[in-house]
Length: 216
Length: 259
Image (tube, rainbow over all chains, first blue to last red; front, side, top):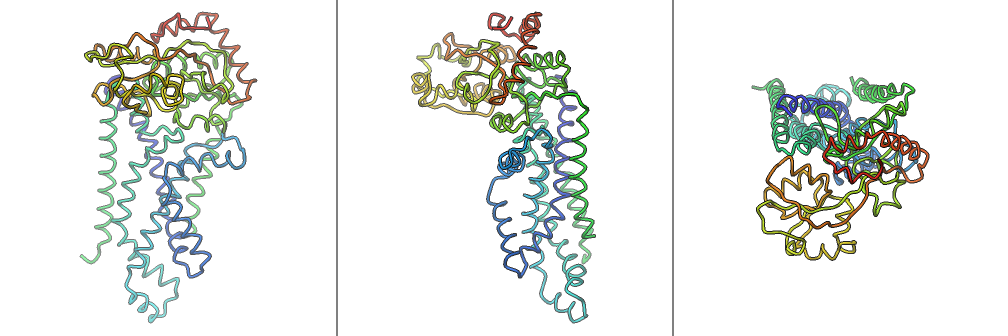
């Protein structure tokens, strides 16, 4: 195994990891909002449902959730899984899981907005919807960036859990190369790739935070 | 904006489902589940998965005109994988003994022995001197079961200080090298491969923990597929392909059952 062929294989695995990362965020970042609002709903049935959802998702291992999402059609309905893409199951499981965490971060952000903001908006004659979309939401987004950044970075590293249902992302490729060549080198290289990936993520989050800090 | 946010994930999910459906081009796919941490039977070689078992499976597919799909699996999830139809068979140095009730097996095609390797420079010389030592095994393998309480080689297992169960052999061999375990019980083919990868580091004990045979595991009751694959495998073996592959991957030719 030459160094470059190893890098090539790892980059192939990285592409899968990035795919999981990207699609998970695409699902979870927006989905977190309805979940947060549902959790804060004054209707007890709605808030109870979302409370239960968040409780289960946060209270069980992501690895178990991935297995569940992939094998559920077979376990409950005896449906053969030969046409159920593993990557789809992975992204669904990750998306639901991260949406629950994002929801709690968003909820914290929404609750942190001073009540005076709401009162002022009402005094200006804004509807509840307008108040939320124009006053509360923009301030919330700004405040939750650091906490969201934490989760996003964790997500990069969590992508390695996808091998639970045989999705060969970067860490799995590294382990397989390590087994095939009885060498630690691929694992160390994978670590460097994860670090580089997260460095970029952290950099992007920091840029975003700066852009939104319009008060100086 | 809100509607847009809802539509995007849905569209992606739809695209992923459709994208996968396109792989159906009328040619039958034969998906082989295997442990990619198991050289020389199945491992990653460049951009492909190769090995004694995978090359045999590939040859069977060529003969049958099937599309060969090598699917490395999480070894702990293999039962779910095969029962749910995610994979068509387990072909991965797959020991038959102790699993007869769980899978429909092909005929045995390779004889295998479970052996013990130790560090070349240590004092362990036979099974008796393994007493009080830490021995590593791979998770969910017959040898792990045999050495554990109630297993066929419990007599040997109880003399150990501890049995360490690890997810794959590579990790075990690394731990042996670094002194975290004193010995590793593993398949003879893998042991030889590891010793040739790291020459001079390890030594194999003469005694054998147990003898067993490898077969191809299919979903319980799937005799039709089993018979098709086995017929093709017998033809391939008769042409000498199996012996060639054994030679290529350093497997003792005498261990071959189908010739």
